[in-house]
Length: 219
Image (cartoon, helix red, strand yellow):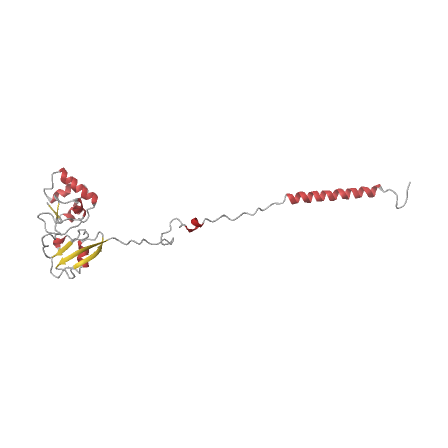
């Protein structure tokens, strides 16, 4: 048997082996823990479509979205107003204006002039002549949505129900295209109106509307 420093010590070698195994276990555990760590993958920011970015949001008005306003303005008509008015001559009015608007644009009628025969509610048309307080000269009868005055009616006076066109009736207050067409159909169905009160037979003309129209029409 050997003795001293060169003697075989099985206990010391076993301890070293155990320490080596422990080191290997720790390294393996550390490697597994590193590989199992949570990863945060970088996410690229979404691309921005330059066209979509400039598009207005739903509900935005053209002004809010930067849209240019329409270059076209409201349509205009020009009519001549003559006779007994303060400022006779040409007046420019928006499409759909009435005789009353043209009279107002001409400064109104002279004091004491009766404007009742003019049918102030009639829609005017471009290029027509409106004579106030005088009889128009031959060939100068007003034209427009209400057309020339019906035979036997004063210029700008009551509309003749038996000769009126759809446009004539549409120019009456409270009468639109639909009701005007009904009046024409009722006229054709009964062979013409025999009295203004026949308007009461037309669907859509009740007591209030008849009272509004009875002085503006004739037969």
